[in-house]
Length: 249
Length: 327
Ligand SMILES: Cc1cc2nc3c(=O)[nH]c(=O)nc-3n(C[C@H](O)[C@H](O)[C@H](O)COP(=O)(O)OP(=O)(O)OC[C@H]3O[C@@H](n4cnc5c(N)ncnc54)[C@H](O)[C@@H]3O)c2cc1C
Ligand SMILES: Nc1ncnc2c1ncn2[C@@H]1O[C@H](COP(=O)(O)O)[C@@H](O)[C@H]1O
Image (cartoon, rainbow over all chains, first blue to last red; front, side, top):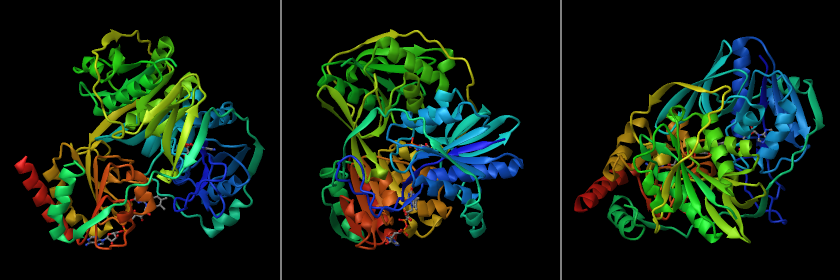
């Protein structure tokens, strides 16, 4: 069974975010980019599935520009077999991204298409289920663990109040969240091998973005807090403030 | 602009609190655009308190009732919601960004062929258009976005929009339901997490970090949760704690955990790493207890105590119990 993992290049979660001159994007100077953390988990999930089935290929796929080649190589270094770059601009409109991915994946024979549950930049949490809907494939979101058996995938997903076990037939789309798939580190051997693995580039079938960012701004400042005191003796005053001032107790 | 549809979740025969938040936000947004808001509930039967949604600004409470809608099914729910939006000619559709809403909203948007603004924390009207305010980069920036789609679709972060009662009663109306065929995912099992309130649904969260020293000290946090009331309060955790195996992942708050926005968030022996703040910085009131006066968590806390959790927590539980006893 072949597996495609859709991955995205995003700023490192530690990075300081500054708004660019244009007021709608971020200033990328000095920003370190990584593979979005949940996408790394999705790659890990794909590799483990390939290992347990003992057959099939894992592809990493992204819509992005030059810098995304590095992200694809990181996926290859982890152990993916091949990579595809759809050259084009990724925007906050997840449906536009989903359309581009649909155009690429539509005609293909893929058993599983994996996504991260959300990308660390736009936090939209939508591209996976949108792509699935466009492709007419079943989709399970926020999957913490899964297993493929006899043409079906059994997924564990955490929902409010418990864990759900959901079954869907393959081909299927899953979005992966934190759980069983702690990503492996690429070995030196893996990094060397990645340089020789196939990486195909083609122009993206661009879809128009219809979600327009008018303004990007720093988060609203929380009013300066105060230290109520030190140690257990400060507790009565804290509780009084929570009741009388903040009115939350 | 045309009217706004609020998709309201029900569970165990009751409207979920977040449903009233979404409806109230829809009613407020509609009012500023000179339009009206309706509510939509899906299920096998209507929640007992469905009609009362009229008091939260629903002109019409629409009920999509069908035996096949008893349990949440992504494909079915998406089809039904999309049909109601289209048939009703709505200009906007709002969801709650709950586990279900986050699963459902993107599918509805894809069926309607419109973009979606997810996890929105504010809504403005500018020049007759809705502007959605949403945290991006894990809350390190906020984007003001507008949808160019025929329907402005958004999911709203729970606990951010206040439920507001309004004059008017609203009418109740059943809508026709056609279920799609095609592959449907099947829930084959459900393991309840011990009946405790989920961290994403709590209005008070008591979170512990690595400075709690070990799982054996969690009773200190449980005592505070119980003092507040386990019907409204839940335990949370930092990733360090979850990675150490002290607590289940379902309790993790932050970038790779849950995003929460409770009335009161208490960070106990949590340093306040940027990835943790990502999950809780829109909380209404934040309290931090940390022995390090320079811990970054104090930068976002409204109230802090510099001290040892081992000493502060028992006293905190005691004082809250005393407060509740006084009423
Ligand atoms: C991609 C990525 C995603 C991540 N996602 C998340 C996430 O979702 N959630 C998350 O929380 N983290 C996340 N992290 C990890 C994050 O960077 C921090 O490592 C983590 O939040 C630290 O947890 P902590 O505050 O419990 O521990 P520490 O940073 O070790 O802090 C412990 C604190 O306890 C205090 N302390 C110690 N003893 C006491 C005492 N007796 N009394 C009072 N205070 C005491 C110390 O002063 C210190 O401030 C992520 C990291 C990465 C790279
Ligand atoms: N430009 C892109 N190229 C490939 N996959 C993407 C892209 N953007 C988002 N994705 C995938 O969709 C997931 C969810 O993204 P989002 O809906 O933006 O939070 C990500 O974790 C990726 O798996």
